[in-house]
Image (cartoon, rainbow, N blue to C red; front, side):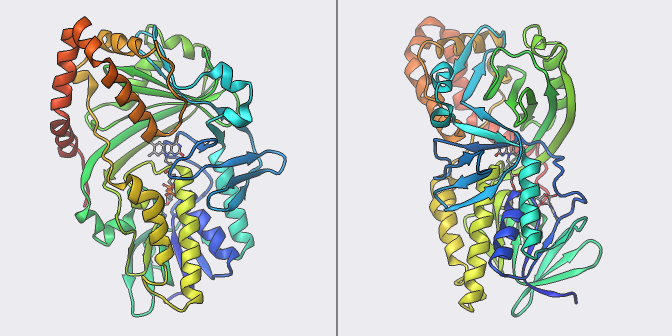
Length: 443
Ligand SMILES: Cc1cc2nc3c(=O)[nH]c(=O)nc-3n(C[C@H](O)[C@H](O)[C@H](O)COP(=O)(O)OP(=O)(O)OC[C@H]3O[C@@H](n4cnc5c(N)ncnc54)[C@H](O)[C@@H]3O)c2cc1C
């Protein structure tokens, strides 16, 4: 049996690293296990560390002071170090298939006049944030074990033991499982069996430098019948993530992205002369969020406990809260669920309570609407300015209410498109079942 720790953390993403830094700074003896050899390299698709500013996501907002080189979390009450490039984001744009119509969420010209007050987000370099958290954790005495893959946990009378692929064991009073969206710890403890399985998502993305865009900041979506594409500014000015994601496991996301970037009659002009900087991909399963992120002295944080894309900020916040809860449990000598209750309350107050039961229904738009239908529908929403937001939950509500108001007009002007929309609405549940059926839940 290896050395004993107060806390063993599995996974060094934003959730695990934040937990390691906080637990280490609180004086706990901590082991951090990470399967990657180089912890700060990002291999999986990720829109970047877009931190919400001037609006609340999961009840939290953030601040950035480049002079102090600190990113603040004022609702939670802490800040983290950041020394690197950054870029403002003002909102979403949704473009139509032909490129003729664009719906903007927010008025960029107005917002840009006072970026500090009006930006909706700041894009940071995720690798540099992970680096700063790792350095702080190590400075606080956290023992870091890269290239170490955890395979499961075993509950002992007064502790939990983490097993690794290499046959090592790490024993802690508590374990934080922060091993991401396809958490092996969650699966090995049998928790996926009680979670609704939605779908397997495939995503593919390229990094680009030097795009020729009509706008420079924010998140751009292009809706086409064959799929949706995103162009998102990175922390480094002039650099963008360009990608596509689908619940249809039969789609070839790489081929779709290639066609969009190099062959699309309108959008390929954005990429002429641009330089590709990286390729990332992922295949991730989407399960219902965990209602109670705790079992057998294991606390679940970040994507491991959520359904997908919890967000980098949400992940860091849960790591912070879980590490503080473990610290209090040890001070109070309550090495059990009662000891870490503050984490369960935090999870329920900000995350599961308000958002955990919301279901994101998804449809294959191309089964119902063609590019000219989408052009028509998007053209209608350009007539009235929509509120600025970078919050997906708000965004879906805004889109829903905008089109609900437009329904009478659509039914009069384009009864054919209206009929297709009604068929699509009728088949939402069937589509959901279809995506679950063609996925690979790997329980
Ligand atoms: C397609 C996609 C796009 C996204 N875009 C955005 C975005 O634009 N903005 C945003 O804020 N968020 C975005 N996210 C979400 C964001 O990436 C995650 O919410 C965030 O990274 C979750 O952090 P985490 O620490 O919980 O997990 P992760 O970042 O996944 O970290 C988990 C860590 O655990 C390690 N690990 C896994 N298994 C083991 C094991 N068995 N043993 C040891 N280590 C292990 C992994 O190597 C990884 O380092 C996106 C996510 C996806 C899937």
